[in-house]
Amino acid sequence: MGYFSILAAIPGFFLSSLFFMLLWGPISSRLDLPDIGYTTSMLITITLWIAVAPLVTARQKKKG
Image (cartoon, rainbow, N blue to C red; front, side):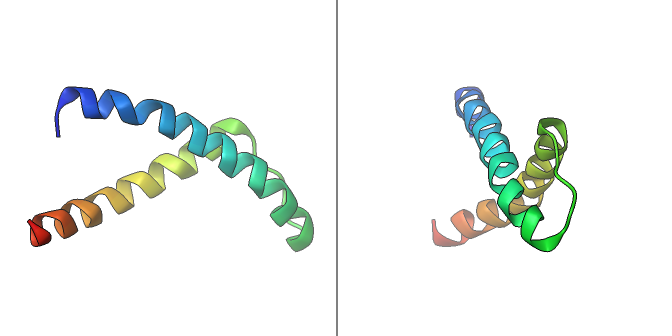
């Protein structure tokens, strides 16, 4: 994984955070949970990415 592949993931992170925030609205209203803002959405997204990235890397190494 090179420097440019990390740079290529940056727009995906911001879009993932935006989609997560937008999709959380309908879910939270049905479950009577509070809405979240964009910064909270970014925190949740980066946490998920950090948790999933090692699993994806291990899977790719196992295949290759």
